[in-house]
Amino acid sequence: MNGWMGRRLRVDLTENKTVIEKLSPEYLKKWIGGRGLNSEVLYSETWAGMDPFDPANPLCFGVGALVGSFAPLSGRTTVSARSPMTCTSRGSDTHAHGDTNMGGHFGPAVKYAGYDQIIIKGKADKPVYLWIDDDKIEIRDASHLWGMKIKEATTRIVNDLGDPDIKVALIGPAGENLVRFACIINTYSAAAGRTGMGAVMGSKNLKAIAVRGTKAITVAEPEKFAKASWELREKIHNSPSAIRRTTQ
Amino acid sequence: MKTSEKVIVIDPDKCVGCHSCEMACSMQHYGKCSPLLSRIRIQEFREVNTFIPITCQSCEDATCMKVCPMGARMRLASGAVVTNEEACIGCRACTYSCFMGAPVVNPENGKTMTCDHCGGIEEPWCVRACTMNEALKFMPKYQTSNNMARKFAAILKEEYKLQGSKDEKTSGFSFA
Image 1: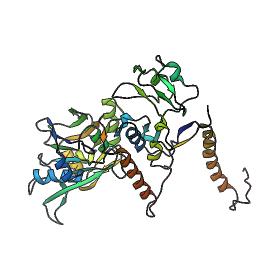
Image 2 (image 1 turned 180 degrees about the vertical axis):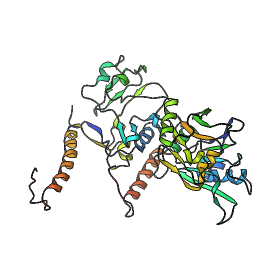
Image 3 (image 1 turned 45 degrees about the vertical axis):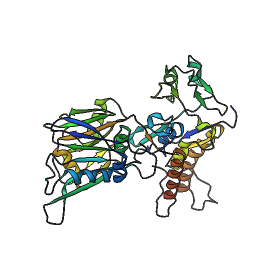
């Protein structure tokens, strides 16, 4: 398959089980990107009135067909779950669909590991982190990381696993303490900040997801793809409404 | 060295670590996107917001060519130094001996690879893909010294403008 990787990873932290599911081209073409894939899962697998901290709340990390390529504006990862922060209307206590997205290097790493989506359900009985190394998935103890802030924990995980190129998405003390607007951070500073997805992750006792991948993303016509990407980028950069920064 | 020989010049001040060059390089050579298949690599020092592209500089007196036991490192007519995959045995001596670690081990066949300037096209894909307005430049080797000097001089120029008179045309500059 071009663009997409054609697989999703399901993790159950209660049962300590992981499953790699195949995704058909029809399904992917229908739901297209991270947000679409996540929405389909939430629509099918949650119910009215579900509590966001219910272990069954599926925390979804979705990426689209272009993520991991050099197409402009292609780097976001969508994070979705039933939201502890967002309710259906002011004053309501009916929790609504939570949806946010983050940049950084996490999304491309998920694609290079061979997945279009990661779905996490259940709740671990103690703090854990997920280590995805292509097809090898491990649920590892994170008690030594619980309480750590983002930079410290990322550095510690990357050192423990022994490769500076490993990409990590994680929560800090806010998510651990179920702060309603807690975010999920990857690559030190890229934030999935809306709708309190960090709290959902904390409610599952999941500190972090570390990813490394060695697979490649294919496209149907490399020359045309490259040309189209670069022309689009020029258009964006030369747009009158773009502020051009050429140095850091 | 022929004056026509070009090289990819890196400017770490401009690089923001987007890795577009890596994806473009792998796409040009292998038709797919994977940083592991790229001959240019970005070294990240994220905690100090510094990103440094590393790619073969086709040294005039290349250590890799001398060290290769099979004579597989060879210089093309364009000046680029590449690995002859038929002769390469994957010992990686070139990787260890290169002062900047430019030779990349191709994970698919265990052999090494370095920048070949995309086979002699006018603008290598990494240079074209760079999103930061010339963090990578493709220029004749003999012009690179002037390039560096000009970069430094531009910084001085800004400082002198601040110290000197406001009229650029008539100001000499005084050293306080």
